[in-house]
Image (cartoon, rainbow, N blue to C red; front, side, top):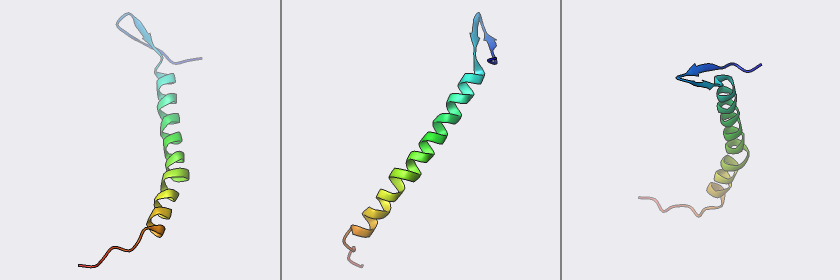
Length: 53
């Protein structure tokens, strides 16, 4: 059963929209934590030290 509401003459399945939004946020955070963050840490470790002021 899908939740729907009428917007004008069109039925809008807001339950599917909320589900897609939550799935997107979870997937984006998982990709960030598993791919972007470790690569940034590796990049910081392998980068040459910057000269001081």
